[in-house]
Length: 247
Image (cartoon, rainbow, N blue to C red; front, top):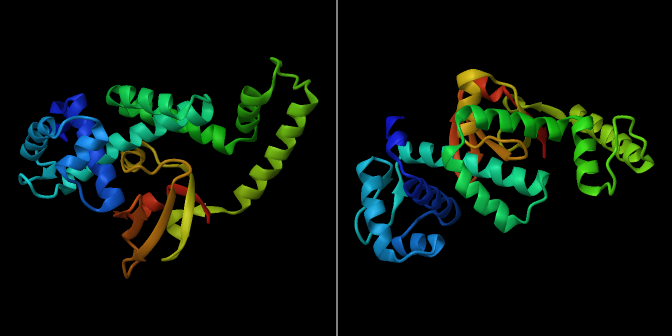
């Protein structure tokens, strides 16, 4: 999408705010956007006009604001980057949520697609691998620094418990393509590569996100899902790349 190249950080922030408002309350107004961004309504209007010119929102002065299909794609891409950064700072590094959110907001504008993919793979590893979970436990809880010999009895117990839990969770995993309408799954891993993987990440399909299957085409392709309050469609080959634990 070439329009993304002309979006300033401020316009990306406005687009992300509109996405969150539409997701949560089905509509967005200038005063809602101003309140969420902590700015005056008069400064919102020029940004709305620019986003409208770019074809990313439907905007008529003193009317409700909505995302165009192109705007939803772009907003979802920005929001996904914010999510993975803020969760990494808060859940993995233990930062306070306000600071994690602020740093994610500052960094999301410059995070490349390749950086997004690698950060998500690290997220997947720490979430799914027993060794990764043990490392995270030691990082947050252990008062001393340990070597590779795992000499701390507390750490060994953590590792054994996590390993058993991971084995149980793996036994319950399947792919999104195997879920039936009405069933929900929590994402554990995205197995696709290249353009397919990037499209799924840009849609906001990230580890720990819950997806509900709404309906299938008569031949089973495409698959319509509910994600973050929005309905999206996936090709079956895309859904087969998404590993989930049924909830």
